[in-house]
Image (cartoon, rainbow, N blue to C red):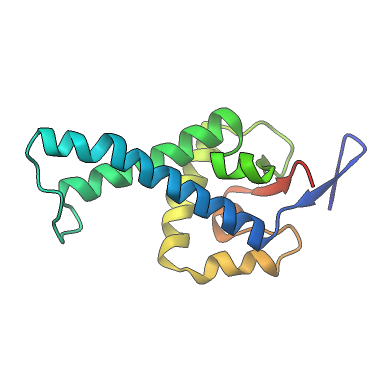
Amino acid sequence: MLQKNKQTVHYAGFWMRFWAYVVDLIVISSINGILVKPVFRMLDLPLVENKVFAPLTIATAIVFYLYFVLMTKYFGQTLGKIIFGLKVINLNGDQLSWGTILFRELVGRFISETVLISYLIIGFLPKKQGLHDLFSDTTVIQERS
């Protein structure tokens, strides 16, 4: 726990963050279904292609990363985190900078997605940080209980 303006800060544990992430994946999937796929249909682009660099794969990856980067930068939280009362904070107390956000959400999340065990460490570290948090000196706190 961290003291912030004489208030005790509670770090968000694995399961709270997990369920917030599931909500975020549902939101991203909805955005892709409502915006990206219809555009691909209108342009007669293939919707099913098993290649890593297929246009649909690239477009959905862009939506994924833009969602996390923009929501975290402007609100400090994604829709999933808002629902569960969670917020991303900088460990030194500063406002989240573009550099911190980009590093956390692009580099850190890419590494975390490739090494899934890096999310499990959240349950064992005192500040409940994932690998992407450790890289960017951030953590996720519970704003409300």
